[in-house]
Image (cartoon, rainbow over all chains, first blue to last red; front, side, top):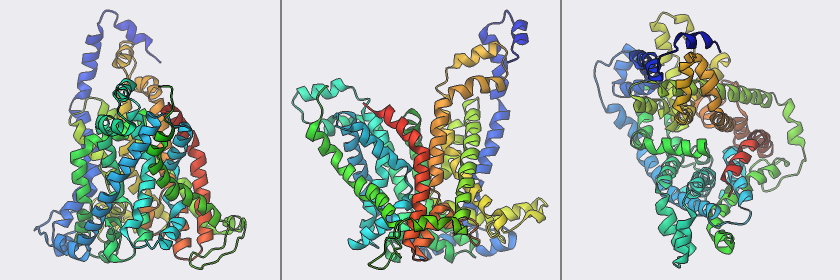
Length: 296
Length: 291
């Protein structure tokens, strides 16, 4: 560090005086403009997607992808909605979401409670085993999962997705929920026990309500992951009537490779619910990711 | 609270553990078994062939290529997003207007389905109608316009650009949270001492971020081994086999070439590497969470 000379040159100034003139210009327009430009570059694929989806194909082809549209239309969306079979894939993805997410969060909360407050035997070993699941790629399980689903008659069925989806969601959910439930003061749990409450009552009336912020976060993140899951859906579902949005979008992409505006509309149809949910719920997502990963 | 939960604790733990063992642990272990067989994935019977699937891997040029691609993918899609994410976090932690909005923008790609990210970038890379070639032509770089996903030389790089686009947000969020935990007086003292911003970054910010570095890099590495969706939906491993990674080559062997035994062996290899690399992280997490 070459800090000797400047320090000697400023012997009588106070801390506040040094910091103010140094920092204020930095906060100004320069940094903001730079960051705004970077953000614009980052979001430009999505902006371009929206503009393209709203223009007629002929306009796109004759004026190029970077031109401003000469006219606007919603025809691309109606066409993509019909051909992309989105009414069906939306319904299927929603069914999976409703069946899987609350159940997954509930059983994960139960396990997290057992690990955090019930002093379960081999707790550390259980945690190690479950956290190891964070590192397991889905593809190592697809052959046996496929065999299991086939022998249970659950291929090409949304129900067949539930088990694998639950299993792969559990590690992260337990990680976040365990660290949250652990912070609930033991005195509260103990007082309820002395009042005669059993483990279930304590779980349902004390632990779950007090964990509401963590539960909401985990519910949202799990919903996003479930909505986006691709590989299990790819190998287990084969009829169009049972496909979820990611698999449906992949088919759609193949059919519309020469129709850029229709393709843009289809992609948007697939991602708009996620984008809306994210915009409104981002506070929870950000909080959960940083709590689950940074604090540990 | 000295008494242990006994049976009640196991009642609470059982449902999640049961699902976890049936649908994750059991399939993962049973893949290990399939990897020692010549099963085609369809026939009712198969033979145990020992380590043959493993010993034949080095002579499969696609496996070698997939392993190299996985390595490149791991290095590039960890290092670039982590460095960019750190730079964004430092910038956002300074005096910038509209922080929540900027943060929202940079993390947005991370919440999209990977298939849609693949579709978006496939659309941007389209040789005739894609925005990227249109942009290059518009600024007079016609010579650089090329079929990005359609030629060996650029295909892997093009998929990694999409991965970087979606993966910058996560390190940014974690670093931002960690930066907000660094006490302000450290910087004030350094400023009094005349340290430049660059010196402050290396001597205060970076050392304070050490725990965050560890978590960010560990999670990014773990994630990089899982690569499948993006490659499958964007290039299908092609052109030829230029963008095959272990995950996709495993899939093609199982579901296209009826070589389930060989395919699972490929998955076992890459999973073992992933586990070995991540064990320190799993261990540290367990320690932190232990009672």
